[in-house]
Amino acid sequence: MRRREFIKAATGSAVAWPLAARAQQVERMRRVGVLMAIPNDAEAHARTVALEEGLQVQGWTVGRNIQIDCSYPGGDAERMRGTAKELNSSAPDLLSR
Image (cartoon, rainbow, N blue to C red; front, side):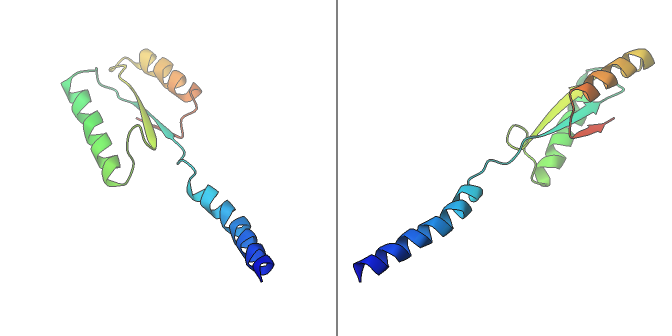
């Protein structure tokens, strides 16, 4: 009888182990690139905070499951193009302006 109990326990552990391992996996960090056509000032900071708060409501937490890379090239079109290329080359999951 002990042999059967051992086999049941071993089989149950072997079946449950992949499920437990999958449940413990860390959530993948998503990257968002944000290009703001305003200078880095109080308004830009307020918009960044509002973005983070809105994402928090949806379950996205900066540093836990999302990283936000903000760039503030101002209104200069040439700087905007260069900054957009830099953001895009870092391969974010989402690029927004």
